[in-house]
Structures are given as structure tokens and as C-alpha cells.
Length: 112
Figure: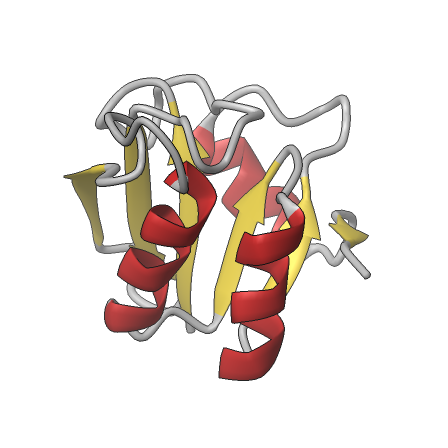
């Protein structure tokens, strides 16, 4: 399954970013193979509509799950329409890898 996690650095060991639309990086992880790739978040530099720009990028990457600290209403709406599941970090999430591990253990919160 393809996951995308908002991050401060382009690494699975790097810290997560609790902001979705304004995070510096979006890290894509294949939960089955462990392969990952980091992308600069196209929404981070937007003067407005950061969440929508980031959401469209995630949709274009064909992610099945997106994980962050929060989602704005426009990004969340886009994910709902696209059928992408949203999960929220919990306190124990400190790195991209810890987010993946806790997701696989089904410990992340479901964003409604």
C-alpha cells in the first residue's frame, strides 16, 4: 500500500511535520516493500491554497493513505472524493518510520 507522510526532512528517519499543506516534504512509502521516496511539497510555497495543492499532488501519486497532524477542510474534501484514507499522528509519532510502524499496527487516529 502506498502511504504519504508529511515530513520536515526528506528521509524516513527524519521528523514528521504536523502541518499537511505547509510541510516541507511529502515522503512516499510502500508499506509492503519498505521502499520510499521524498518529494518537495508543492503546496509549501503557495501563497494560498497550500492544502489543495498538496492534496492534488498526493492524489496524482496514487497514494492510498495520507498521514499528517491535521488536514484543512479543502484537502480533506479532495481526499474523500479521491477515496484516500486519512490518518492522524499520535503523540508517539516522531519520525516518518514511526508513523509507518504505528499505521501498520493500526494505532493512528482516523480523520473524519
